[in-house]
Amino acid sequence: MCGIIGYSGAREAAPILVEGLRKLEYRGYDSAGIAVLDPTRQPSTQLTRCVGKIAALAECVDNDKISGTSGIGHTRWATHGVPSEANAHPQRVGHICVVHNGIIENHQLLRDRLIADGREFRSDTDTETIAHLVDRAYAKSGDLHQAVRTTVAELEGAWAICVTHDEHPLDIVVARHLSPLLIGLADSTHPNRTDQPEIFVASDVAPLLAYTRVVVDLEDGDTAYLNAEHYEILDIDGKEGRRPKRQIDWSPLAAEKQGFKHFMLKEIFEQPRSIRDTLMGRLPAGSETIDLNGLEPAMAAASRITLLACGTSWHAGLAGKYLIEQLAKVPVEVDLASEFRYRNPIVRPGDVAIAISQSGETVDTLAAMTEAKRLGANSVAVCNVIGSTIARSADHVLYTHAGPEISVASTKAFTSQLTMLTLLATRLGEVTGALTADRVTALVEGLRALPVVIDSVLDQRAALKTIARRYLHARDFLYLGRGLGFPVALEGALKLKEISYVHAEGYAAGEMKHGPIALIDEHVPVVLMALRGGTYEKAISNLEVVRSRGGRVIAVATAGDDQIGDLADDVILVPDVDEMLQPIVASVPLQLLAYYIADLRGTDVDQPRNLAKSVTVE
Ligand code: AGP
Image 1 (cartoon, rainbow, N blue to C red):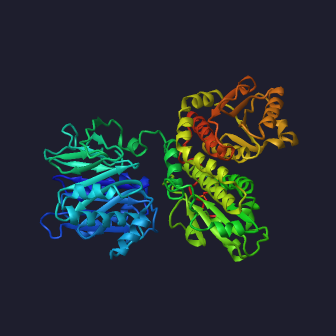
Image 2: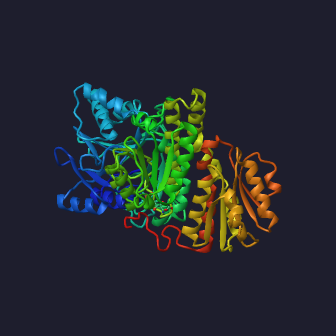
Image 3: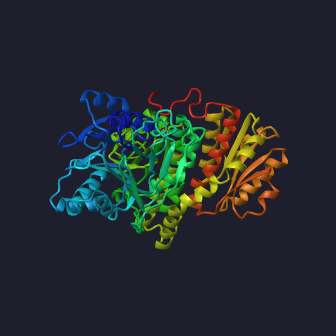
């Protein structure tokens, strides 16, 4: 997820773009750049880009003494190509500059065709492909808006783009499909108004609020020609797009959280999109074949796969073990990275070690992967941060593309890890022959449907807040699960304890009778995974054991279960999905339960005490 901004008007553009990018930094921050156009210069475009946060860009811009009253800017969360000046946006080709937020699924095919046509590329980005296409289309039409429309007609995937041309220094052409983009209009009531015409465009409202509270939301398929004097929107069919104006009443800080009270809640609600982005590029539109960058033969042939991770990522790894062994019949070990490196592990050449890490900087996970490589394993990283240390150290990397996760408590990164591991297990099952073609198709269809399914779970936020209020004062929780429900229970307990400071313990449900049952009384709520499937009856037995000892049970069950309501004190129903997809779907209500209990208890949800987003020390 990246941040893009554009301006055209009477004010100096550079400060507006740089300050606007600061407000978008939460969307991505590995590199940044601006292009400012000055009609008195030839060429009119002045381009400044650099690696690092916006502060580094601001310094570069000051040094360049840039002038001009229109331009575009971008803060990058790399999806294609490591963070570098060459891969930073704006991407420039001839007179054209482009900034882009999204993932172009067919960029490699388009790039290959352009190279075959004699075009040279200077970056690894999918965005440069867009710039070349616009440059080529403009050479034919001489009309920038039409050139952008011709270009986006060739694209597959997601994009929000701003495009400028040296010979039209006051114009910006934009396009939006599946990535957010909105126009900011001159606001005569704003305290920081100017009596000159002006227009803005950005990924979200955060950078606009300093100048205007009047916005126009673009819709998927829209393109627009922007100029301080007027703007024109064309819809996906090329007809005039009449989009209503909207008044924004958020504070700037609220805008960075897009109206959510905490980044954690925003990121929980981003999961339909983040899961879609994890799938995008791995599961190209219209294709049934999962693309794992050609890693599947080595993984399928491995005598053993070892998953290495910490914390939430280790819970994803535990689910990954169940998934890969059930779907691909490849033996899997899952190790706490902090234990692996000290237990003199047995690793044979040909083994595959998969390091799972959102940040890609967790020192225990990096050290464990390094040890596994030293012992002869092929290493694969499942990471969310492009170019992170673990990603760069591994032999291969599968990026989860969940976008920046600001809140210390991992939510969307976790479900993206689960999605990636499910993709991997399914593909390995196809390659090893453990899965029939029909079974693969069913899993692929289930994965594609996840964003809509997660949306329906998120609609239960009010019910979950009610349950949170009911158990607000409990001091101890037990989370129980069996099979794929076990890692979900562990993760649910971790979410609660790390943001609410309430003691919560995840346990294998079958272990209850071996000790934890001594804890059960009316003061210790039990969250029980009781989803449809092979372990359901056992879950009901657990439930009855807890209730018979005066315990209270919050059951997570499958929609359509008409008996659990008579047995549990509270029931959270999740949509009926393939058993292999249940961990992804069932984790979301437990994230919300933890969030609402913590919020009601008044803890610092996004920055819980004693915790860091990335544990880079032992
Ligand atoms: C999860 O909510 C915690 N923030 C923590 O357990 C985290 O998952 C762990 O530190 C691993 O981080 P990584 O995924 O960045 O390696």
